[in-house]
Amino acid sequence: MVAKMTSKNQITIPKVVASKFASPYFDVRQEEGRIILTPVNPDAAAQVRAKFEELGISESDIGLPPIL
Image (cartoon, rainbow, N blue to C red; front, side):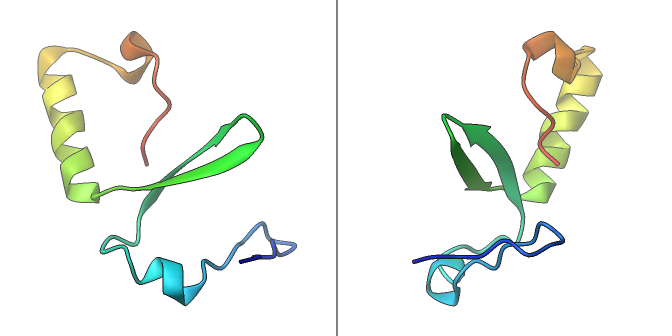
């Protein structure tokens, strides 16, 4: 399948692919010339952030990009 990026940097995920995922939220990263989309549950991400905060751990401490 081919998807076109608009002038506003928007890409429509084909329905046949999008319908396979329950969450409308995706972690987006670039890796080796590819765009990687990973479905995320924003509630789970919030729980992880809260636990990190409770432990005094920041995203810069673990070297990962922000999730949302």
